[in-house]
View 1 (cartoon, rainbow, N blue to C red):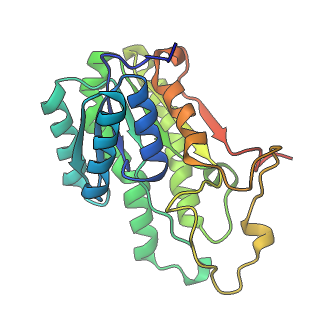
View 2 (cartoon, rainbow, N blue to C red):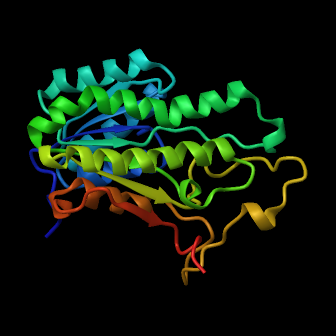
View 3 (cartoon, rainbow, N blue to C red):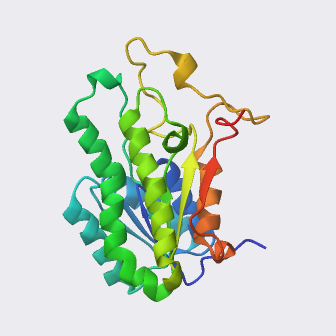
Amino acid sequence: MALRRFDNKVALITGAATGIGRATALRLAAEGATLILADRNVEGVEKVCAEAATSFGVRADAVGYDAADTASARAMVDKALALHGRLDSLINNAGIYRRDHFAKQTGDEWALVFRINLESVFHIVHQALPALAASRGNVVSTASTAGIDGIAYAAAYAASKAGIIAMTKSLATEYAPKGVRFNAICPGRVRTEIGTGLQPIDDQDPAISVRPSKLLGKMETGEPEDIAGAFAYLASDDASYVSGAVIVVDGAQTVG
């Protein structure tokens, strides 16, 4: 029998048009979730909504969302609550990846990465907290193995993801008495629009910038579906005693 862990549950997922966000949306839809899917790529996220509805018979609404815009973040949460009057799971997945030699990075580039990857999560969670407290819901955010171990040529990205990890642990402690759970996933190298297809930068050293998977039978790059199962677990009641967790899903890229 297929799992139905999200029947009568409402989940909001950002960055849902492609990659890990899309795979997670379809995984939750397969388990019965009512979805609000947000992305700057409105046409793309509408297609994911149609796929979820057609394949799994769930309701899925698309919402335009610009992670670089504070007002957009708050409006997105307000629209989700207006649609359904409740929120059980918030999955923060929208993000940006920029890389270059540190000496060539500008302050504006650094600030943009932080605004999209970290500050947007603050604004979304801040707006959603009353609803999450009412439902005793949960937040699962996309961090990265880069936020734990660092990564060459992407210091801003790594630092922003380390911020997600610290925020997750801090809020898990603060809101445990209210029954709201906070967890994070740290994917390694995954085949997404952000993670693949990047052109090498000048004088890049692959030996320090590419981490091959050590998991037997896997290529060095995981697939979005490899990550979606971890999101589904943490967002479900199966993880009702899990909060403040930072789960690495990387095919053993960062161990040994």
